[in-house]
Length: 311
Picture 1 (tube, rainbow, N blue to C red):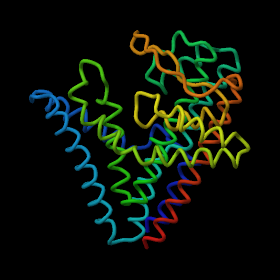
Picture 2 (tube, helix red, strand yellow; picture 1 turned 180 degrees about the vertical axis):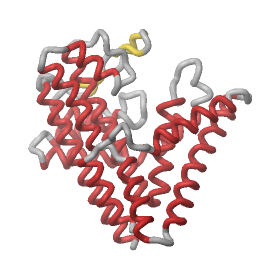
Picture 3 (cartoon, helix red, strand yellow; picture 1 turned 90 degrees about the horizontal axis):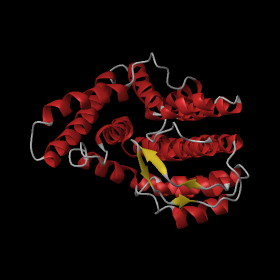
Picture 4 (cartoon, rainbow, N blue to C red; picture 1 turned 180 degrees about the horizontal axis):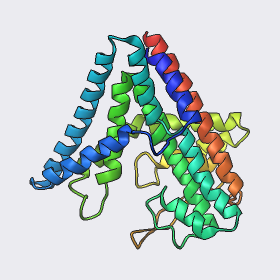
């Protein structure tokens, strides 16, 4: 059943994307995190209360999705519908292609303020002072990082443990995005969520070091350079995982990513990743989107094969 659900869910993700009006599991997970944070904030020490938050959210999401699927199993078409819907909503191939391209189209129209505004919905850095190159760099970095976090990792856990494992991973990812910050408010409370996200993405990020160069080779991009730069620069990022796909994308496209950025009004001197072999242009974002799409398709096909073999 999961094999057919993956095919249906993946095709829905490609064609429909992420419509705002559709009930979304991640938004429900986010609401659970908000409610529990208000309660658990009262407990001390903060690391313990944050760990309780993370374990409660992940286990409840896994259990609810498991029971929902098992309950629907009495009527096979209903189970297929539930699994297909969950897979569809937990992937982001279409939106990860569409959203950066909105930014690019505004740049091409000469509307840099609108491009910055669109970009601010995609990244956590301050976008108000970014020039065109900075905007394009941020778009490519977003596509690269989310190729792992939004596609390779969810499909990896789907193949490993079915839809409940996939949605449990999304709970980890959502926890990290909401409380896994290093500022004064979350440095201790969000510690467990950030560490769990690092652990959950560890293997998928390293698989991307093989997948991205392979996909780049198919697309006539620089696959060998993608692999070389991933090995050379993948460890420069403050995240143990994000630097690997960013470096691989930088090498494949022949561009330089990273560098200083402003977060919450504070300049952060990040290291550069990749080599400035070619200029940053809107075409480079389009190439990044094509590379992401192919990585997504290959990962989905591989996950399908694993599910079939598991029987």
